[in-house]
Image (cartoon, rainbow, N blue to C red; front, side, top):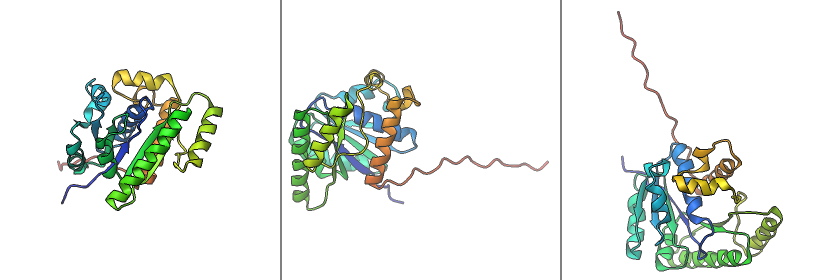
Length: 233
């Protein structure tokens, strides 16, 4: 039987510090613990995801490729997708050719955005890049914005309204600016592992489920326990 081709989720934005790497890491750990085969591609020159992967925690159990050569982005995504359920790509926090190539290979583009005007503007601009990539590849490439590092609900409500007005399709889920997300980066883990019952872990779970629906990812196969043999005496 041929290896399955995994769905490709690309996190992209031209604004640094929006929460891109943290979101990718948290989703990767959540889906890995749910029994999915997750592969990671770090295309960010800062190599943040690569550093977290090297810490020896849950994230390090997943296949990761660090690739900064823009010409190798699409072949690497294709290689990782063979035999994986999901390929998560962390792009640079600025617009470059590698980001465009990754978007062109995506099944879904996730655009993290903080709640300030500059982030909202860059999220809208990144959506335009996705639209251009879709025209170039002659296929639909869906994109969704994600409010990250939310500090005040009133500001988040206003930012969400602006994202809607700019036709950036914000997700219902959002990630609040919680200490646990910052702590997880030092461990190469996620709130899913560090504090499974926390509000941060619940936010990651809601985000993952919403993305699963958008990606049309099938539920992971249940783990089966081999039947015990009964020996005749």
